[in-house]
Image 1 (cartoon, one colour):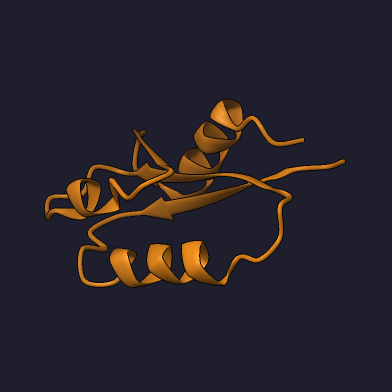
Image 2 (cartoon, helix red, strand yellow):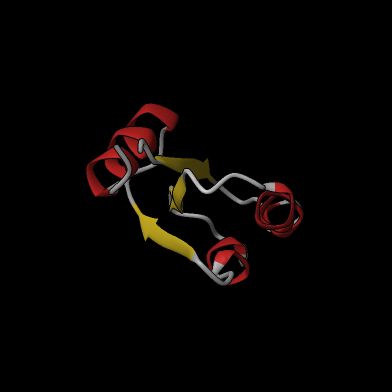
Length: 79
């Protein structure tokens, strides 16, 4: 069975990241979601601390959506 990794690039998203992660964790009814990876691009607010949600991996990379997505993909375990 295929499994997916959800990769979320963030930068100073302290106001919204918790709501997004809660939604994903509570509404994802499928068993194919392997993991959720939040890739922080150097936030200066509390984004990284807030994203430390149960079952969520938080990693840091250089700023920039493409850089963050590529870095997250390198760490992803989903097929």
